[in-house]
Every structure is written in C-alpha cells, then in structure tokens.
Length: 418
Image 1 (cartoon, rainbow, N blue to C red):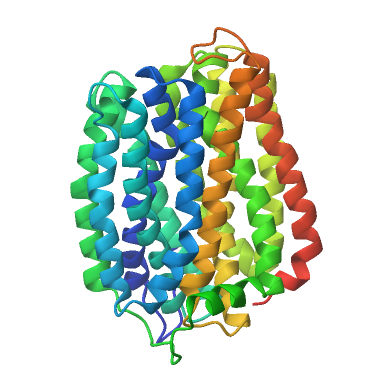
Image 2: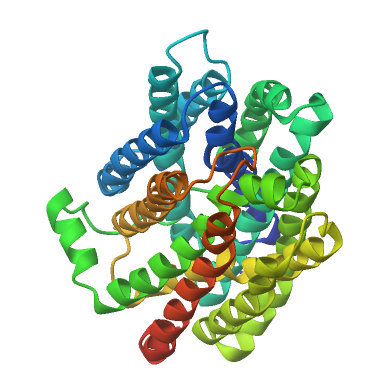
C-alpha cells in the first residue's frame, strides 16, 4: 500500500486520504451482515423470520444497485452524491441496533432498508470515484489496496468495540452503533474535502438502460462477474454462519471478536504482499493462488472439536492472508476491464452491477442457509444440527471456491487486460 507512485500520478497522500472513507463503510458490514441476525435471534426473532427478512431486504437492496450506479454517473457531483448517502447511513445503523419493544420483524426490515440504501449508494459512488482518479493499472491496485486496507481497520474496530464497550456482544453493539457516527463524520471529511474529484470523463452520461446493457455486453466483465459471484458466495457463507459456528461448535463465543480481529488483521498485513505479487505475476494469476491458499487452510475447520481455539486461530490467520487478495484484486481487475472496454464515465454502471452481485451473494448465503439449517434441526444455542452447521460453514465454501478457481483459470488470458 505504501509503494511510491510515478511522478505526476496520484500522490501517496491522496491515495491514503481517499482510502479513509473505506474505514467507516467497511465498519458497517460486520454489524449489519454478521452480528445483526444473531442480535435479533437472541431478542426472540426466529431464524426462519430473520433469514426471510434478510433475503428480502438484500434482494431489494441488490436490485437497486445498478440504478444507483448509473445515478451516480449522472450526478452533478459524485462527492455530493456520496455525502447525501452517508447521511442516510448515519441514521440507519444506530436505528438498527436500537429496536423498540415489540414488532421486531418490522423494525429489523425497515432499519435494514435504510442502512442498506445509504451504504449502497455511498459505496458504489466511492468505488467508481476510485476508478476515475487512478490513472493506470498499477495505481488502480494501489488505490484499491488503500481503500480495502483502511476498510479492514474499520472491520477490526467493529469486531473489537462491542466487547470493549460492554460485557456482552449485544449490549456492545448498541454502543458501537452510536460510536459509528463520529467515526463516519471524521473519515468522510478527510476524504471528501481533501481528495480531487478526478479528470472529467469527456463523454455525456449514457441513458441508464444503455449504460447497463453496455456493461453486460462486455465479455470480460461478464466472465469476471461469474468468478466474483462464485468466490463471493464462498465468502458470504462463513460470514453469515461465523458466530453460530464459533459459539455452538467450538464453544468459544466469548473469543469471537478476537478471531475476527485476527482474520482481518492478517488480511490487512497481506495487502502489500499481494500488491507486489500481482505486479510480477499478473492480477488474475495472483488471485488464483490466493483462492488456493484459502481452500488449503479453511477446509481444516471441519475437523475441529470444541475448545480448539488455537487451531481455529491458525485457520483464521492463514485464510485472512488469502482474504487480502480477495479484497484488493477483483475491484482492481474490474477497473482494468472498464478501461479496456473504453467505458470511462460509466464506472458507476459497472460497479452498480458488481455490487448487485455482492449483495445477492450475501442474500443467498443468509436467506438459504439459515432456513435450511433450521430444517436440518439446527437451533441457535447448539441444541442440535451441529453436523449440518459444520458442513455449511466449512465444506460448502471450499467447493464453491474450487469452482471459482476452475472458471478463473479458463479466463486468465481474457482478464489479464493490463
């Protein structure tokens, strides 16, 4: 992340300040996607209801992402677009973890929708802005590395703060959701007030339908999107089931924050390594290597027994190293694809579809896995169905990553566009 940039290019300070907004945006992901289902389940909402609400909310959220992307391309100011979206997020996240007594399902659905809208609009425009200010393939990787590296700092904060603020995760989440607001304000000011808007596209914004069809007609983009989807579902399954596995299979719920911190710290530390390797081997090949490491390390989680915290920590650290490549390389490859397609000025359209797939991955992981686990006899608290939980958490992601590896290997020449 700290490699020197060419003379006249985006400065190191500008890349770092651009990445600052990645911290609060990534901070949101852990409470919303990992902690929220168990938070509401412990308040009395059934797993089936939680899964159905998550599925509906995430599908609805995903379907508007292409629209948000083209809207951000057409906005008079991408920075202004981001600022408005961040205001929605600043209200939505605290509300999610301050439910009133009764009507849990309705509150969960409504506050999720508000938080998702603010997050999605801000994140899509932010990613598209990054593709605009980076001027070549190397800078795109550096910009993505700063964004994802500082984003991992946000994820670590989100994993640690609940246990710092209160003795229980649930009480800590309430306090953490309030602490999020000043963190968001500081980072947003750093990014929006100090980073240049980037060069103009030189082209008039395309109509929404034409912009989206143009992205989907790109063979490179569709092939990259397919790899990203398979790999994304493989990552979304463990993210959804992490707290259930650690608490009910390993019996180490009180150490969940430490495991998450280890996982994300390892990913952050690995980012400069993957950036350097990608410059030697190319981004697609480097991504292939990282996915192989993820499978080789994570599959051993299936064989763990209650109390195997040390071995699970090793798995978290090793798979976290592989995560560093997952975070930095796909978005950088996408920015290369946009340039190869001559689609400057339509970055939001590409990232809108990209984020749609990201959301569908998470929706499928929660909306399908939770009801299926309940049907298999699993109940939060470990009353039964632990074998099904272990298969869903440990083995299913490895199979999906193998499919992603096979598709990426066939697409390496096509995607090595820069």
